[in-house]
Image 1 (tube, rainbow, N blue to C red):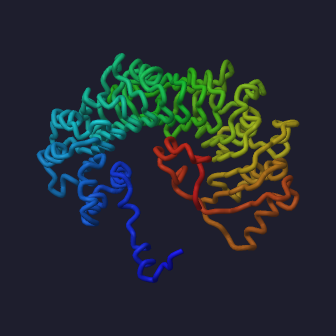
Image 2 (image 1 turned 135 degrees about the horizontal axis):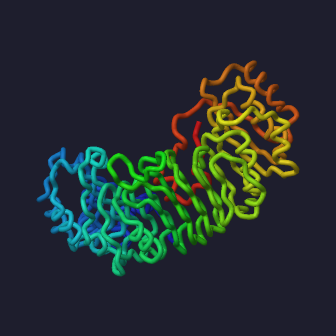
Image 3 (image 1 turned 120 degrees about the horizontal axis):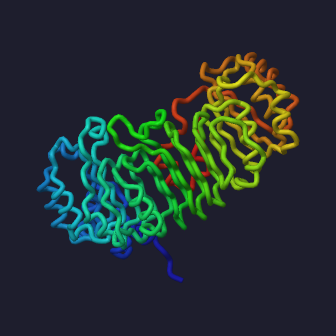
Length: 461
């Protein structure tokens, strides 16, 4: 066997193995980089120059781009010069700048965007509040139906969905402040997106009811535009707001996320795999699982227990302690509970009364997070103490304090009030933390579309 000299070894170590990869692989690497970083790869060597020019194209047009001097002609020039294919087209436009719909339609029809995988078209959402009409989504957006995997639209008018308006391999869809009819949305979900996995619906117009029927959906997030006031089914702009969410048939649905300000009727007819649910709010009008209904914050019977055994993670917002105790009877396999309670709306219920409400129920909760915990109110103390004394498999309880945490003596006093030494789960951990502002550290897009997140309500303290 030959001897490897030091010089030869050094030459071997300096071999650029990345540049030896096939053009297609290098193109995928370049297209995943931020646009400016991808362009800089041209200076690496002559080997990389043609890679950048032929790599799947990413087009990001933000308001900042126009402030830096980008013109419509520049966009057309870039698209004309690139042989394609396209990977991502992202457009965030302030309508005040007066861009013509024909420009967007022309960009989307460019050969440089053939085989586009991600499409994002966002007009300025504030224009809706100022009374400006949304821009119409060009029909050319549907030409990517064979290849589009991710789509997001904001403040635009959706066309009526026909037989040809399908996205056959779309997996993620976001509709924010769009104008879409109930029939179009239902058709899009039922037949137009056969492999859709996650759906985010935020503040949309002219669609008072969402009917969800999808064989593939795993995650849904919903927020209503302006909520519900009395019996009036329209907002101040005479646009019908969302009043009802109906999960008709969703055999793969795992999470149903309801973001703050949602005040709608919810009916879950068929979602046998639903594991993550919330935030359910105390002032909600009606929740129905199968043929059994829960009206607002009233108590519920054990009939629901057979209806939703799949739920493992539940988030409750502004509900009374008795409602919480009753609700956990509806979700017998519940493991994680995030809850913000209110003591308004019911007479004071003592620790003993909580125990009577549950009876012989085996509380299987492993993690409890009590938001905005008022440590000086007996109602809050008794509520937390109930779980301390009865959750036999509890791993952790986090009590979030609005007024901050005291010293060690203060913590010992709180432990004494909660009877931590007599806890049902000897291995449970109890933490006092300072209040954080948002309901979650994750944006709605992340909560809904990132299916690897086990608990979308998790906070970081």
